[in-house]
Image 1 (cartoon, rainbow, N blue to C red):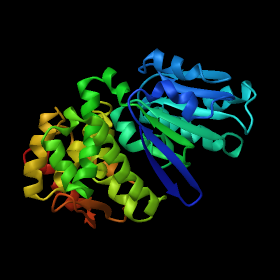
Image 2: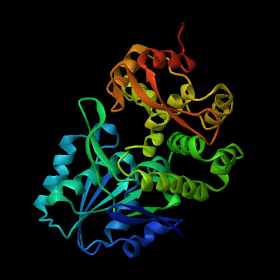
Image 3: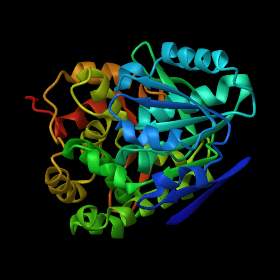
Image 4: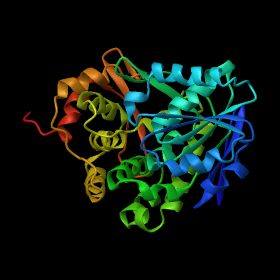
Length: 339
């Protein structure tokens, strides 16, 4: 087991990484109390059963898988479940699942009685390397991703790479898109490792390196006032595609496409075959005007442009402003359209 400690202004918590750790959840988390277990119907039932066995009084809420459950209605349902089970400030919320589950459960924990303990067991590669670390919790509202939420750090995170065995190749690749994002912006050696097959040969080490990169960023900028904005690399256009495509692509697939226009040609020449290797999409044939309409709702959007991250050399990044007209032109890199 490897333990990476995330230390921010008012909290410090461990991220445990190792095969077979799910069976040790009762040892690593304090579950001897009332615990709301939030999961979705795509998560294997045995994962929930294993964790629930450690809880003195578990209440399990199983949501429908997908972003459609990441709503204020689901948030309210979790609050009602805790209230009905007489949860108090000494009780806890445990997420078991992907990013949707973790974001929603964390937000529920942040608000119930002004905040109770939150634990996270991410079971997708995407959530293991990204959303489970850093304290961002949220729900979507009126078609806008993560429009309502809070920064709320977990008490601990447990990452068991064995849970990835039940993922489809597409879901595994979605998570790799976020690892590739971190490698492009912070770690040339990690990028080269992925090119050489590191994701197939030693995924545990790849996860640990990605988590450690994010730890370093979050510790310097917990609330996305500066450096943490780098983690939005690929997300500006990616979120626009995700909104315009209306569920046709997974989040990580949209990030993969969104990274390509933000890379210098030499970087793109190496990124393209790596994305294709894992079956990640590199072209979007939808309506560019719909993509740009969604981009205008981006939280980094202001006036006639948006702040974004570009990569000129692997392992480096720069932050810049781009006018919407410039960004619309960037879309031609990965859109099947005639200019």
